[in-house]
Length: 323
Length: 255
Image (cartoon, rainbow over all chains, first blue to last red):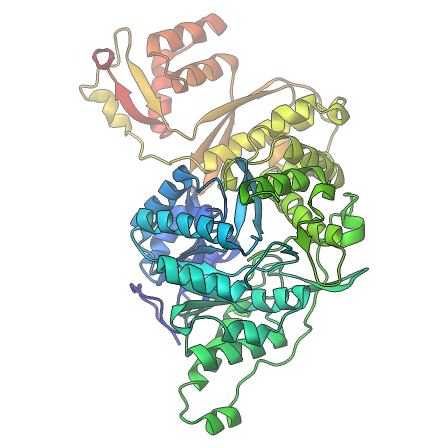
């Protein structure tokens, strides 16, 4: 499926996360892909890539994905950063704007990671207040993405789908369902990923993310790391199939942020997502089952970089994660 | 129980210090050690910021050995973490940090190369304004008289070094022969999606830098002549226009 002209809404097709190494090639070759998504913070300076995105905007439908607004920060969101996001939206008129159910700024320090929140009433009020301020600023409804988690909080009184449902109800935002993040968190925290997906409000799902993860062996057994450094794992494709059968065809993004492969590899992953989305259009559940399309099985885990000179890393096999 | 603001302050401290002991009762995992799981977040922060610094300072990293650079970057991150999510603005203080970092005391070239690489990063993320053409010189813009100023490209910035850094930077930190100290006065300018580096004579360096800082032409000229009595003002101005450095002219009356 292709949509090689800019549109005001994301098509229910596969798009790719556009990263620096592919920008020149995409500009030159203009490959057929449903849409493009970029990280907001990479285009908030006058760098040459910002001018390149201006050209892209003429040919592709664009989604802007923020990673630094810190919607979960108890001390509120940074108004300067929100203003930069507003300017970005004014300049590029993206079809979609999304952020994360996480915090990344504590006491004025930006931690460059998406940290988890306790799921209780106090945190719910904080997130809803920050989302409302954001939506007021950008004058549009945004999508909120679930992040990968490696730990939870003893004080939590709600499961994540319930917390997200409350956010949707109170703020009118939509949801960006990251299937890989659900799978990673389900493994790490011990919950059923299908039950998680089934508990989400169907009408709120505006976009889906797919990415690769790594499995690291630790003293506690394997922990899944959301590293965006490999192809989508077979189990994640299966969960994706479950989700789109439930929610219908949704704009679906392939993300790949570390060890970025050739553009053709990324487009290949997007092709599988497109085939699966298209198979939903076959009438009748029995026929769909017969036609079920699933990418060929691949190695589901990869080695990830370890910070070997840091004492903590020697025991944890930590690696850089994304959402 | 802490409120969410206090919890986030404590987590921020623990990520930077590595000491998670005060948080253990608040965190929850399923059959896994809480400290080990928390360390994943800590490593995410330190590794991703280290990778960012390696990308902005690749030659400094290579000159000092990448493992040593990662160690220095960790120390820098712990002492001067970013204050905003635009990472393109993070790293401004690394050169100064390295100049005072005890393990770098015998390798001052590291901080000077870091200053050059930050100048490159600053240039690349600055606006590239349309230059005034050389024909502006023949138009009615009054350059003569005290107080007139040239407005130069915002990406133009400067650094000094005791070594010939430009060839070393171009060779990505490699050198065919032993590096001999030589004072370098370097200007860096963005040109589209590239940067241009200039190793300047003393008078020109002072002249350009004075103008870039907003000094009127006559003041900049006096400073340049103090360095070189033969300083050719007209030739310098024509050259700045032809090279596309000048984006505006402000007459004395404008001030």
